[in-house]
Image (cartoon, rainbow, N blue to C red; front, side, top):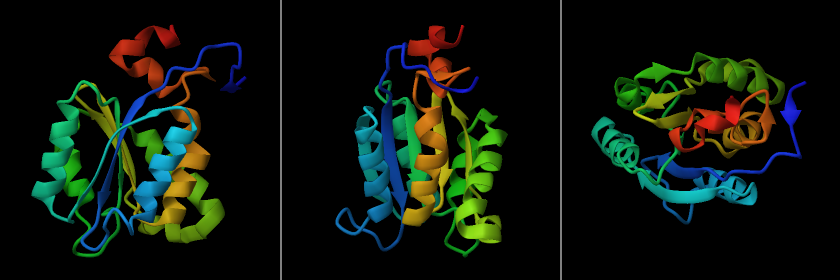
Length: 178
């Protein structure tokens, strides 16, 4: 049966949070702050946090720096996944991925359907793997970040989740999902 197996040890992940926005600062970034607070509250390590503008080059440069950093297991990105002309996160990140995690978008949209209804169609949330780093890109609203963490990522990132969690796909923890 799927769920947290309390008899297993918890293995914290090293997670970086990237906010993509032309207007937010560290003081006004409620979405990035929510993700950082949630991941630390769950026992994970905040490996880094940054804000970049809605610019393909800026997004890609920060992503590539964290992908190359062995201290980062997961990158959570918030913002730039909609349909305005400035929303370019998918265009910036997709070329970096060697694999796309199609199921994340499906599960995220199912979770969002319960909170925002069919407005979830306006999100281009996605996930994938670049080198050994997993990247999850969600919308920039605080509500979307709450849905993503509380309804999907909190469980997916918990190494005790069975039958398997993303932790078992990381090279340093690959024996967790034998």
